[in-house]
Length: 406
Image 1 (spheres, rainbow, N blue to C red):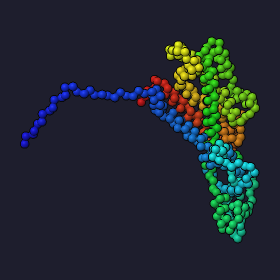
Image 2 (tube, rainbow, N blue to C red):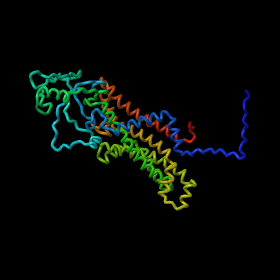
Image 3 (tube, rainbow, N blue to C red):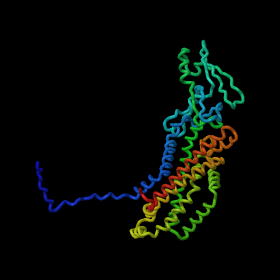
Image 4 (cartoon, rainbow, N blue to C red):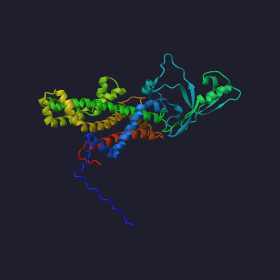
């Protein structure tokens, strides 16, 4: 059967032009983010820093021991190995007159005082025909003197009177519990995991305060020295050289003596005041190369104030080097605080500083507990400092326009 062929319509005389949408322009920050996300070690470091920051922000709300400074210790289980499971007797603690009731904010900032006095025990049994319970002493391997079984009244433990059967259920649910020390305990019987987690707050806090102080001072001194030059530059450069030549530990000791204190906030400020010279030297060098640029000359011609010219036009052009330097200073501040606490010049007991925890473990080297009590906080310091260094290397490559974008 023959196939019917339809005629092909002629093409239009003036075909419509094909419009190709132009790609939206990309900001420099877009390429910086792309380069950073391609760097897997830097992303891993950023994720670990973010995890530590989350732990520091949540603070006492996620700690197994949420007492102030995670300082609730049980002498019966001191220097115990990781993974210890122990039974705990909790006795009601009398409330002191005028003692404030903890709220959400005070608990987040300072922890929550314990509602019970606790004691590690080996077991318990209710005495039939009586309203008492017999508590067996905890038999620690390192105990010098074995404990003696003690008898407690059910009404005393429950805090109220009632039928014996009912009091037994109340006491069993309220006053006896099983606790696991996943990372063991220190020489005072405190939970090592709680103190390690709470130590992130001090390490990140001191790094943040130190970076803010060093950035503010360093940018101010370096910008003034580099922009104005002349005798003022020579004077400020001499000041930088003098401060640069003094060891950081000596500066911290001098600042602590001047403030007559060795508290946590003094350590924060002292570490920050020792790190501004690095920032000032970088800002001064960048300012010397940018102050004769065309856009700066245009700003002077337009009559822009010097402060606005520096703050709004010159310093933003140094954002890349300053961010990289901030991450480096963050890691250096954590190491400096750990070293000062190890020497007894930084954060003071019972605050859970990682450097102080390393010192406590170091004092026990040669014993069974010395190894992990030194290794755990030391590993935490190393992991956090390594994360900041990896992030700093990634940011340095990300701000380099020669780095290819995938």
